[in-house]
Length: 267
Image (cartoon, rainbow, N blue to C red; front, side, top):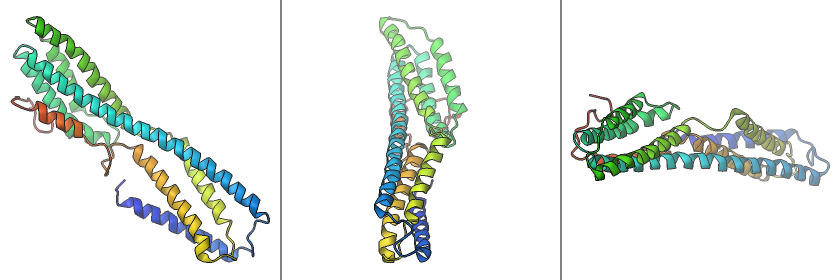
């Protein structure tokens, strides 16, 4: 969702809710339709509280998903830096090939996989470099104790890279199920509808419009926050960008003959 659309959506919902209440106000009887205002206010309090609690839990769940995506990207980038350090210890030309593969992997993540994640997809180019890393490492033979230690450390860092990427990709698709969105939508609609039918012509238009305007703005903003957090790679302002992987690429792409172009495509 484009960032500039957010205030327009909030204003549209607020305008619709306020208009609906003022229209209903014109046909409402003196004192409103509720004979017991205390019971009416209590019912609205129950409905609003239930919706607020549900929205709070959903925001917390979506925020945790967003954080997992960010942490996965960070873990992957750090592991790639460590794998490059290990590759510098391994004997040439195998170590040099691995360093080139790591640079191409980072380029593919940044240039191809990140845009693909916006559509909930993975990158075939990145997968090809994962396979290339596996093949080139299997062809490596350590020559001394230092290289053997580095050889063993590679497996640990490769596991970190794999887990980080898996966690990053797992959050590429929206995690909130459709029934949950339906429940949120129903809760928002019922809360605002109940406020609309509480219209009372005895009060001024401003006093009638102010409460529902505030509530509708908060409800809409909350739902938009959930929508944003559930799509961490949407490319909007505040979305997760490949910042950590870009920093890693700047560190490891030094004096390396990478067998790929700037986007990660093999040459």
